[in-house]
Image (cartoon, rainbow, N blue to C red; front, side):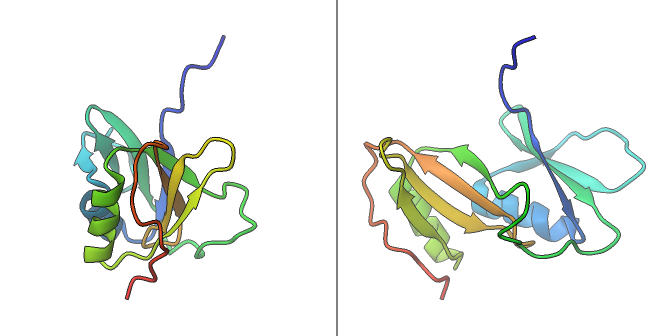
Length: 135
């Protein structure tokens, strides 16, 4: 049984509406069809694939912990300079890295609950990779 690909990430949150809005506004995901579970949540789609499953938690999970077992999740994308301009316009802090030996351009952000994610761009994409503090 060989694995084929990562299917989705499950994120617990005490504020599903806020997280839905952020994943839509910042990453361009759309809320879509979700099974009739007995608990609240939302499935956030890119095209026909639900990549982020938001699950309603009875209380707000702890903010980002650098020692968490799942430290981050990532997406690949195109349009680096436009994406950085979008983050600045939305006042979303980010820091950039170029991955050693691969030259992938990596944009790191935190969602409203403090989950770390990064968006990766091809080495051929050029942009000002100066970190931005969100102000």
